Amino acid sequence: MNLAIAALISGIALCVGQYFIWMYAPVEMTMGLVQKIFYTHMPMAVWAMISFFVVFIFSAAYLLKRNIKYDYIAGAAAEIGVVFSGVALITGSLWGRAAWNVWWTWDPRLTTTLIMWFVYAAYLVLRTSPMSAERRSLVCAVLGIVAFVDVPLVFYSARLWRSVHPNIIGAKGGGMEPEMLTTLLVNVVAFGLFWLVLLMVRFRQLHLSGKLDARMVWDNE
Image 1 (cartoon, rainbow, N blue to C red):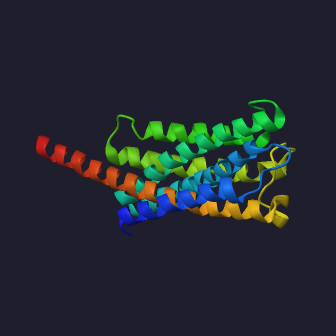
Image 2: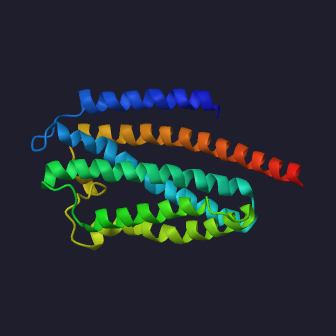
Image 3: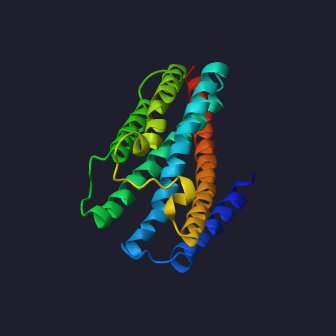
């Protein structure tokens, strides 16, 4: 897909998503306008976990094929996942302050998400470590596979333990009004397109950076 066209489509989709948030979705009776944070919080959380699943898949693919492009995709997805999960934590904290009157509570969902963020932040630090490129890619691939253990735990944490975090994905859309569910789905798709554009851009950057590094090594020799 042409990157410029993909970026244009994602920009339009994000604008449509904002229209649904502010003009189509009803104002929630208890929380009021603050509830609309949810339409950013939930898509960010969804695509963060999808990012980490991509890290898992392409880390395994790198171990099997030793194709450096798989390492680049895993690295790009991890960067996006850390940013998206960080935004999900921040927006969730803002929403929690209005809903529970606290900025943070050591709820199972929140705690496992924070652990997940730290694990993948460590993964990104490892990607900048001073070791040979091949060894670094290999170590990162192993960590990218092992780190995924926490992702299903985040997803199922609200079901496994008592949690104040609402269980949105469930029967009848978690009890949401049809307009709210539609708005959520529109924004999940919109942020998904945005995620894809970011992945494409970052992959190209890492690919070009790898070529430059290889050229510099070749010239020095």
